[in-house]
Length: 252
Ligand code: SAM
Image (spheres, rainbow, N blue to C red):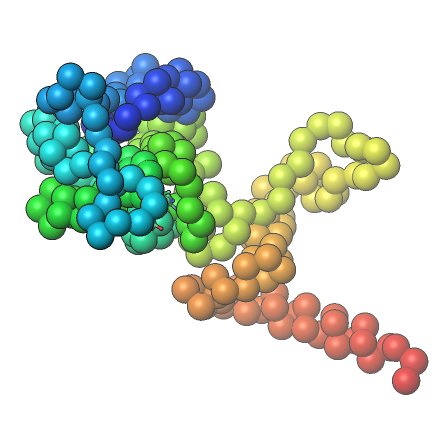
């Protein structure tokens, strides 16, 4: 996959390219990634990329001409890539949206600054707008980081083990199970005995139960997207019985 970022702060991406999963994916040729400086497409001597808003008011707006030229250059460099504007008004990035992007040949991420970009850009040159959540950042760069990381880890081969992305939270409409590592006792707390048993079927079952419990406790809304399976329904019923017995044993 080809990833191009259009930004007025290309150096913000150097640490991303040189660490962790993204770095490894670049080294292994799974992705190619670069940040292009929008200022380089501003024809005037001072490389101005913003201007005052029509209609008055505070703040500045990103001028359309440098951005349009930058997007056209990026599209030439990455044919077939989808052009995405990072915007708090866009479609929310979910694991499913990240998986959709991971299947593309390329993405061009356009980072806004100031009050955002001139809206006329969006009619012709932007394929989609993407938000990383219902809050406002000062610029699209941190959002682009998030998109690049979430998408890269879903590209086959980017993670050491394929299974680890498949069992991640949200991949199957549930949160992931709890994790433990050595030492076996940490500050007086042990680990679930089944995880030390070496019994793989029981360990798998414990993990599915842990995932179900965490989803129920932290994100019950996820059950609307994927109703309980038969196994999950059975587990829920067994907890219901245990809870009923517990509550029934309380003195009135
Ligand atoms: N005035 C805009 C509004 O209220 O909708 C917000 C502009 S924001 C200060 C500047 C830039 O940060 C945006 O153009 C966008 O690129 C980026 N940005 C801010 N919040 C974001 C979010 N939640 N997701 C993605 N990008 C965001």
